[in-house]
Image (cartoon, rainbow, N blue to C red):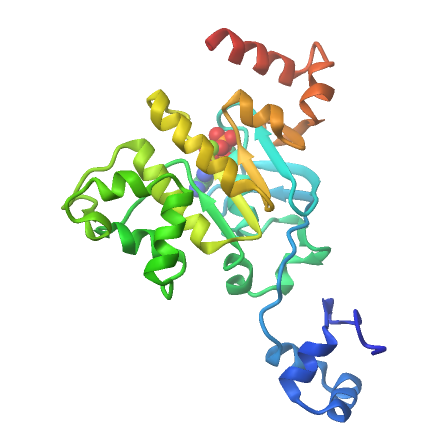
Length: 294
Ligand code: ADP
Ligand code: MG
């Protein structure tokens, strides 16, 4: 068992996994000495626990290389933590979400998952363990069932139903004559904003990701829908590392840490209580503004 926790090419190798992959203990030792690449290729997908760090990350979109959208971005999210990202429009909040999903590569710095550089995971392994509930939810033309199963095509009907219930979507789905077979999108039933959100939440529930990203909708939902969406989100976030681009005061207040972003930089970082103490801080101002609006 000397190889438990050993690291080859930066990837921790599980002894049991190696045994399973190759079958013979002796050959494991040979391969570790000589050809570790083979083991990496044959081992099962690298499971993510959910710790996520950004280290001095700098980023510009490839189409606008002259505009630095993020700079000196560093933070650490422990497994299971909720991190709220707040700041004015255009500050770079959604860009952070895109970088977590590795839609783009940073120009400087890096992202680490469980202390391993994100670049050492395949995109498939990485994204199969992440889910996003975006600001503008796009449902494709198809049934509600297909839309929920989007991230897990092999899901059974029972799993889909279970996910919809947890997302507070089951009742409205059952109210349509075709129920889960209802066609949505341009040629089908138009769902309300709150209903679309709950379908997207069901999609994320079904995927059961380690890392969850929520880009909260700014447009206000009717209060009944809002309550159902919020309940479903609270449920979804439990036990996962969650990044919430937050507009609702309740989400922000309850976060384990808050990153305050302005012009592409984290200018304040801490809990709600920590940040409120800085009376001249941006967070203090943002919260006051929020309270005046409510
Ligand atoms: P936020 O989510 O905080 O409102 P964004 O991350 O969407 O901010 O945007 C940050 C900056 O990046 C803005 O200046 C925006 O215009 C720019 N930006 C966003 N998306 C793109 C893109 N796909 N291509 C080029 N520039 C972009
Ligand atoms: Mg945004």
